[in-house]
Image 1 (cartoon, rainbow, N blue to C red):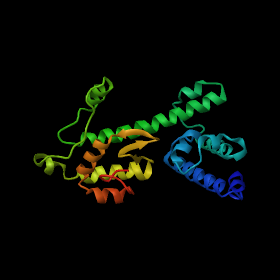
Image 2 (cartoon, rainbow, N blue to C red):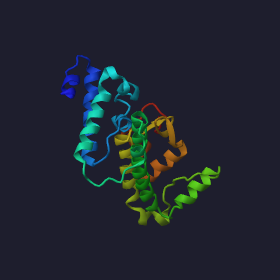
Image 3 (cartoon, rainbow, N blue to C red):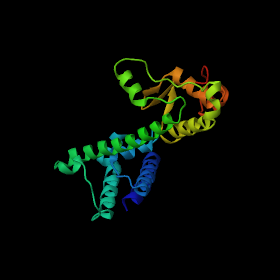
Image 4 (tube, helix red, strand yellow):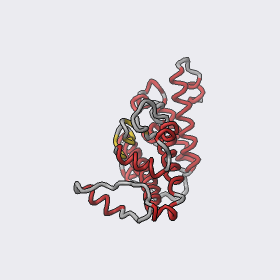
Length: 223
């Protein structure tokens, strides 16, 4: 009923916001992911509603998400629940904030596991933990490079895997290119030199790379 009420609003932005929120909540429900306001906003992407908009009681978007949270909780009632830190907090506002952080942490862990799996397919092998430890101490960062002639045959599937990963990051996870850098929420993930190495390893030309990721008016295929 609340969804129908908001969807019938004369405000087109409000109608689009509730449509996007419902779609994300439905998918999280389908995937068995715990619904939380911050995670819903993040999954809606840059074209979706801002967190401040969702928290605005006048928009009723936050109320809709709260009802979806309650609905989801009622469905899993009685099932074994490992619980989390949020379950030990009595303050409802703080508890909601902790649930949001826990949901984000679970998603980031899944994403990190996927990236680790990809990096392990590279030849020669990559010491992931060593690279992270070295970078945290101000040492040389992990750089990707195109496979040499001697490793090309063993990595025939690498270009396709790299493109599949980048398609997922840009198309489904709201990563984007800014001034040649791969970013998420305006925070750098890969520097321009890393992006170029990644592009070369994917065996795409600068023009094809630019068209694939909708980069325009840039140098060397980067925005």
